[in-house]
Image (cartoon, rainbow, N blue to C red):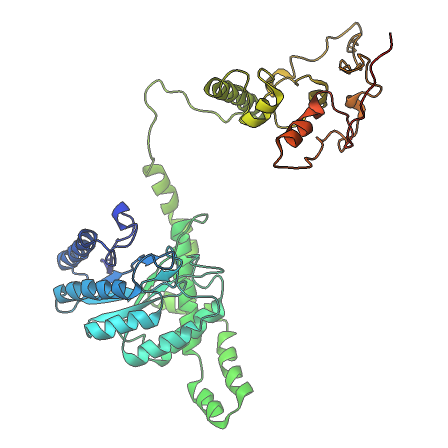
Length: 458
């Protein structure tokens, strides 16, 4: 095993936020070019022949930077690195039509990459990443064109459903992989210096088995491409027989080549089933046992997962503390972030802390207990285990300020729809704001305007 392509990294540094070799500031561009030249030094030390360049440079908004000036900066940086390459070394330029830039990526497509490589010289070639295209792009056409021009330098194999998903190659569209490999075989790419690489991100699956499976998928697609009857295909194409030409390709694609690949592996002294061989080797268990990451300091306790009830108590405690901090910051009587509501109600009329649900006691002037204190505020038990009923249970403690009489209907028994505050008639009027907030005070419980009450007779 030896090193293949050296990949540069000009996108993770904070200085590259507005670009690397296309950055408007000369010092940032100098930093990026120096990194690329260092990669060439690594190529000299390791014997690697290929330097792959992918730039995340681009803009997100129109007018953010001069598009043509950024192309000039890119060409200048590429020319300096190209001049540093030695004999037998290549520069592989990769493109991507969006992400992380969304308005204009500096190397967005194969045409831009091809134009720069054509100007640089024969040592500069294009890399095709199968996930760096817009949906519906005919990737095999790009492969055929670059092979025809002698500018296809390599592949980054992966699969995609939406954007640059970096899934296992052949997992999303195996027929597309077959079509690509047929153009590679047709254009003589197998016997050339085209580099076949995997550029994938394995998040939920085991990495080594996923890589083995990806290599097997490429092998199956290549074997099917080699089975295409090219003479019969050429005859059908020359005769204009559309269905026959398509049938020749589909016959090769629908052929099960897995038994053939098992025989080839056995002839070369390899295991016929690479995935099963890896599982039987015990390598996965070995690296898990050897690569134990991190250790707790002496005396540190192991943190156990908290239950749902303890998490709810913690949230209630944090909400109560946050309410107190906001009250101290905004002045006396303000215990919620809605300072305007408390100001309309008057000083000292603080509302209860938010507990996650609306309590009907709020319409009666009473505040519901916090979430953590509801269990402790349950009624005491009488003899026999039944809850003891209080004398004031079910009564409405609210009385009208105008008449001094108790309301006829308790708001506790109202429906949820009638318990909502009355809508504001004029949102920009201070009087309407006060009138809407008086639902919690002396206003009527309905949405209508309260009737004036005559003074009581003596």
